Figure 1: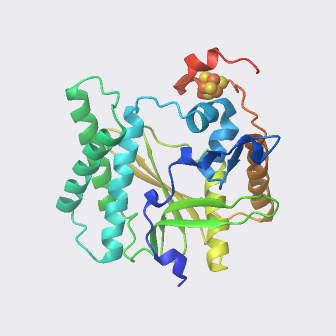
Figure 2 (figure 1 turned 30 degrees about the vertical axis):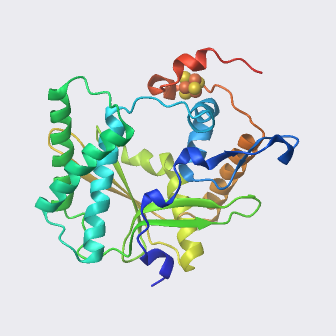
Figure 3 (figure 1 turned 60 degrees about the vertical axis):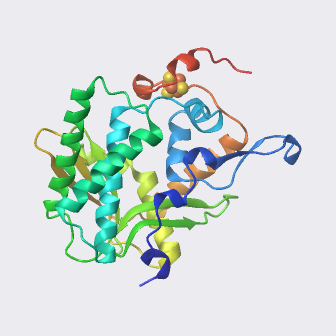
Length: 289
Ligand code: SF4
């Protein structure tokens, strides 16, 4: 058992993603005013998917109303964290206690990150009840191991050769056998065939971090989908640990993103992601320089 993985570290122990990019006085570097202290899988994924949206969100820090999907996803995630922490600590993780935890996370997130885009109170109540039912289905499912987790919300970091800053991340759950688990809430059934490819950056980063902390390779990198359909479903996608080539690919993506951020390379990258991008209006006014 390795110390860094046994200590539950709340996700709040990592500064919010926007804090990843710090403005330094321009004399600190003649070529760039932006130097991240570290990179996380989410910041790099965001930069690589559209560098201009990354700029609006994390450098200019333009706030947008919280979407319903984001609010619900965070409430579900926070409740799963409470559930796993209670199990890890040997405390009461019964449905009644978790329902209270869910209600409190739902409200607190509305206050802290709202306003949330609910059409009306009826919709809000429907969405709330569907989210809680989804959590309940997970808690009753066979996906909850009978063994106590090794770590909950485990904050780790890793060094990537050639990358001037560390990589940091928080793993939702590390199972007793070192399997890294990431929860995803989704409105529809995921395409399990694409899941490994879509989330490779995040999952392989977790593997690299666990290997650096424990000198051991996790047997699997798992995505647990909580599907918020009328009859909620829980789907676990098991992905084998990455080989040398897949790890190198991820290391290269970190280096490319670091180079782009510190060179202040921010430009529109139109694609499917524009349909749900909240910065379309400000993006349309962009021109180089
Ligand atoms: S609208 Fe598209 S191109 Fe523009 S910032 Fe958003 S994702 Fe990027």
